[in-house]
Length: 243
Ligand code: 6GU
Image (tube, rainbow, N blue to C red; front, side, top):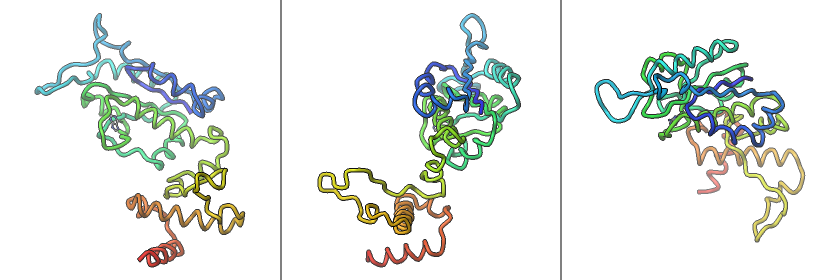
């Protein structure tokens, strides 16, 4: 997959894309990241990319000219690709969006700075994504989150693809608790069922704990998850026991 990132701060991506899972995916040619600084398309001697908003108000807006010239260049550099704007006005980026983006052989991410984009830039976006209900100083950290989450859905990036299939949210539920050695640490004991090695019992323990965690911490996620009749019966039993 090729990811083009349009930004005023290409340097802040270097370490994130050099290390760990993302770094090896890039070195192994599974992902290609191409950074583009649209300052190069800025106006005049100062390479200006922003201006004050019509109608007044605080802050500066990104002008359409420089960014869209850069975007047009990037579009022409390789095969057609969806143009994704990173803005707090976007639809919420989640595991489902990550999975659908992983199906593309190329995506273009556009990061804003300042108070926002002139609306004629927004008109160039096929979709806008937000990573949550808070305001960041720019789209770069959001772009890193998108690239990270999307890359691990590409076969070969994460050591074993089963580990991706067992992630939180993959089946619409949060992860169950997990333990490694030692079996007892500072008086806290790993649940016996996990130590006994009966796979059917372990699976059922994991499923029930995923269900419980999700229902308690994220009722919104729980309502949207594929929960079976036997899952529901189990949860009802647990709730009764608690009262
Ligand atoms: Cl994508 N950009 C900015 N600037 N702030 C955000 C965001 C994006 N997602 C959440 N907050």
